[in-house]
Picture 1 (spheres, rainbow, N blue to C red):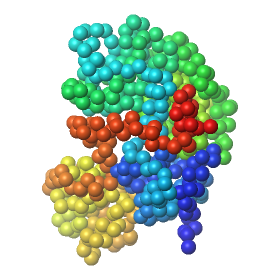
Picture 2: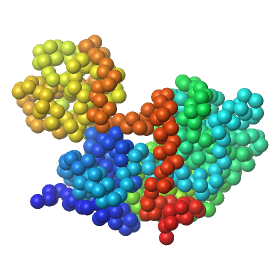
Picture 3: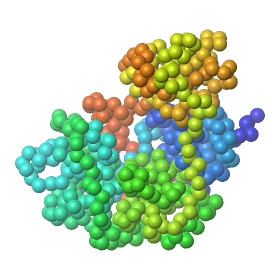
Picture 4: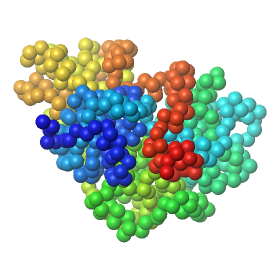
Length: 535
């Protein structure tokens, strides 16, 4: 008998639901590494290890139609029980999980941020985005030819590695800052990222605004630079431009772009009607920088910096066919990002007054869970461990565990924790969970059966180190096959692995060919429709 908490559905039904125009959240509850090795095109990463923390933000309406996807190993059923306890009422589980999807003849896509990545490739075809090779950029730099080189990624990514001389300006900030950086209309602007998508989208953002300068995307980004045998810059001290006053001409260009593609600007009453509509999901997102968001925003709005929203839409918007309201405080960034989000296929609008609009949002229900018990303090850890001889279980991300962990500790992740403890712990042996944060501890503790007081405790992994207790590193443990929380395919390319970079770029340029017409039909681009053969 099926559990009353959910209804199993076959892959054919899910495929139909994804295309019926009604709201649906296809949540892949496998861990990040499993997700990245193969998932349906419209799947949203919602790993079971962080489920209750992430899902209320990704799918805030509790009666949204939700389909849960796992590896066919029962984790989706466990996730359904957790979500039912949070009040979700339309829960379904894909029969057979990801293997069931493949068995039905449907593609499992490798990688992450699939719709956004595919969109970037389609944009290049649709608008014939001009590009510059790494060799030609180096030649121009060495010849002293004037140009402005912009890194369209996040500041953290820029710090890790960048093209020498680049200024970090995340794509969502380009519309606000380009003129101050390139006041000479004859000076070329080159936008780069780590691969392809943000280079293309950044260049097209500027071109769509009618920037007079020649604008080019650096072909294949930092990976193309490294593959050309050129040296990347690490630890760049440069920062993004300080927020300046928006120019009237930039506001006019942004408004014209939004009007051209059909993005409306709602007044407060219209926007409130979207928010109050209990039959639809509406995300209210502040697209400004993290510093601006921290300094003040519309109460209840979530932060989604514009460049990253376009790059990784599935990390902010979990419900297909939902609505999105974008906010800023200068009427430049929100309409520009909204115009591109609309082209990505989302029902999008801006709001008069931005973050200062008199809107009332429902209370935020995405607060991180907290454990019922306090952690063992750093100063008490040594004595507690000495007196209890516990089994140590480390719940840090696997790369952090490999680098350093408590000597002798097992590595685990929430979906496997209970089974591992059953196999490893001696009868009556106390257990100490070492976690990166309180939310991880709370979710992990909820997986385990009740124990006698004092025999199941937790502590911050950093406090173990602070207490001077013994640590070790295991660079190859857990094995790659066991580190299900980490996608080596994506991350190795940033660590000097040129073969990984080649594979990644080949994957990115090959995405369109893997897609079926219904997977491309939602994009609103001149040539995307022809490419997809969609009606």
